[in-house]
Length: 330
Picture 1 (spheres, one colour):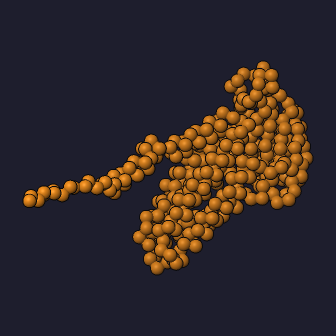
Picture 2: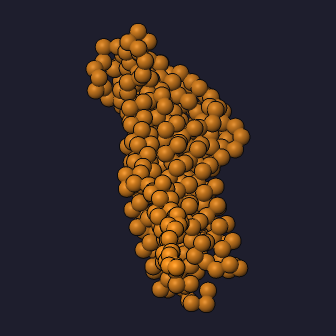
């Protein structure tokens, strides 16, 4: 009797899915953004900046609004740079609330002058002077630390595109006289050919230096060029603060900024607080004293240069001097 030898039959088990393969598949499904996508925020920022600058330079109607948006973005951006210093300070450090308070104080102190410069309050009086020798009596009321005159006029239709005309006014209060000189230059207006004016209305802003505060004011037209079509329209405005008041306030804020910068650097932290806040203070102060609607692009450029050079570079230099001079226990 023979015994049959039965060989064992190997059953192939279904292989389990590899964990490495599944993880690789998941990685392929959730790929990181491409290198181009990383630059999209920067491209968008440059595009927004370009649109705002183009609007400021090419659109008299919307240029002031674009300038307001641009200044707001720049102000909040620099404020964020200053505020970000709190992330490097340890929890419970008493300097954190002080740094935040100074940052907010600078932002609030500059927002008011910038807004009232670009968007002035309603005029207190509007007079029209037709020929040299004409005079008008006006009264400035309320909080009028600064008296501002805006002269408006229109070129005659036959004047060329590159027209420039200088006019002269005299402002008198009591025994104080102040000469006001300005230049009209043509600026084109938007619109269809049927609605576009042949001669555009322009305005120049003058901050009176010798005459301040509320009270009577006499305006006399001394010179009106032949290229300007009469009458000359003079708008009288009043602001609650002057350049001297702003200079005092901004100087006190600059001292506070330097003090915070020194305290931050004493904690072995590389500080850009003074430079960031200096740009905001210097550019706003310059813009308030020199802004005119007709020269908005050049005024903004000048304010930017003053802010960067005087406020940024100058603030950093003053901060380094203060770090070396101020005692360590202050």
